[in-house]
Amino acid sequence: MKAILVIGYGSSLPYASQTLEAQATRLRQLQKTPAYTAYDRVNQPDIPTAVRHLAADGAEETAVIPFFIADGVITREHLPAKLGLPQYGDGTVQVGGRPIDFRFGRAVGSDPRVAEIMQKRAAEAGATSASGLLIIGHGSVARENAAVTEEVAGRLRAAGYSHTEIGYNEYCDPSIEEALEKLVKAGVPQITVLPLFIASGLHLKEEIPAKLGLPAGKTHGTVVRNGRAVPLVYAPAIGSDPLLAEIMADEAAQLLGRTD
Image (cartoon, one colour):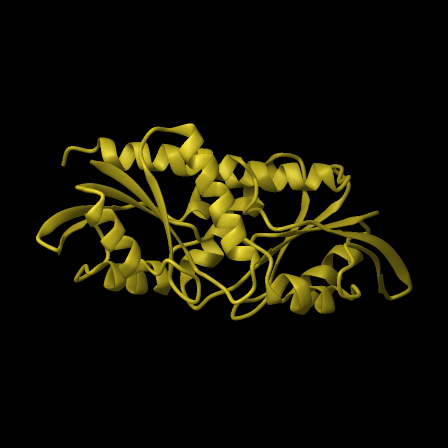
């Protein structure tokens, strides 16, 4: 039997698990291969439990889809170890005497189509080609996170949003505040903030609004810098968009269709 295992980060807040489970439901509707979910931390099932479920159900080949924005320490170290693999990459694990061949996919956020979701978020927020777009990345010591963020920004600029800037919540530069000030100085009439995050959580609910100057729970506000007041719209995370389920279905089909 072939199967798909979608692995999310997990959180004590409900948003991450709700987002992943909704996408897993969409994924099951898009294709016939059984799709399972698991979490690196906090939520259930955890990864070892999901592996036991796969073995009990007779899975022999399983596509592993990391439900993350970018690959990094978690996808390259935590997930393989918890799956029982000696290192990152494809491999076979024996579970209760049954071999399961795991085939690793990319983090969903690394697919080029994620830029389409961001562009749709911008349009829904009322952005035009004259608007400023502020893409917010999480930031990481791993280069992959910044590379994904930069690729999305490049695609949005190519789509006509020439005033597109990046700001990172932590680890990387420029900061959110620095990117925001740059957009105000550029004279844009409106700023749309696009978080390149899978789901809401403390970062999106508390930390980032404070850096934007928004009251908690508000999605609209005004940025004031050097005497200029610029309207600001704060868009939601991308993880709930149905296109991500299509991305996962395509990635799984490619992984499970491989013969090497």
